[in-house]
Length: 235
Image 1: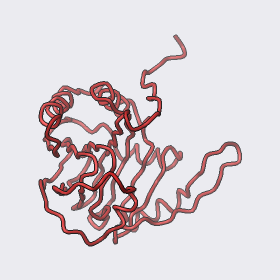
Image 2: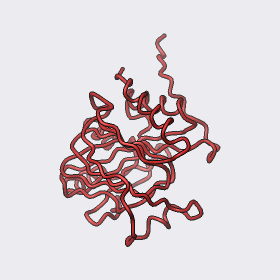
Image 3: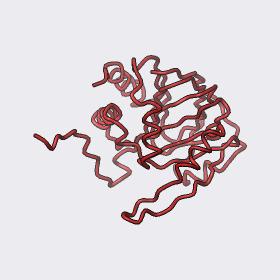
Image 4: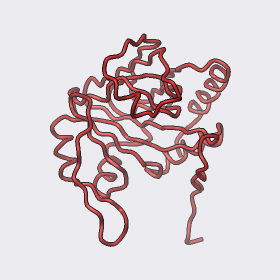
């Protein structure tokens, strides 16, 4: 199991500093080793264990051909097209990686135990500095970013979007007057906390991989938390 001592300390810092004064927080060297790797990316893509979005150089999504699998209700995306798009230098985002591997499952369990949350795991990355991420945008839930490989410049803005409008409507605006609050470079092992509905942007400088953990408050959903206990059917 990974050493989560520094991770637990960062969660306590978030609790102490953000409970009554919500703000972004940055912490270096939270993890000594990556909790996910490019091998995990290959596994997710090749075995259709997540939902892949491709972001082009303009920060817009690229349509990926998909088909319905005969033997189940799953929708299978074209692995070849995903691979070609990443090879062209586009950024990828892979959602629904909540069972990515045992270390990630453990980290999500700690988060959900410490706060009143239901978490997912998203992989973001690209193989070149040309792999731009999204325009400045908001995410409705809180977000935790863990850098896995390479460096990424992050800007978290002071501006917070209204909760009265859909996320898609807010993120459709391209020309916004935003004021930076913190600007940091995440290196492997570093971590960033982004408050809910806070505008932010990532700018990769080269090949990079990061884990994003969207964390929805249970008070906004009737969803049942995932069972994160690890079982052994042979015992």
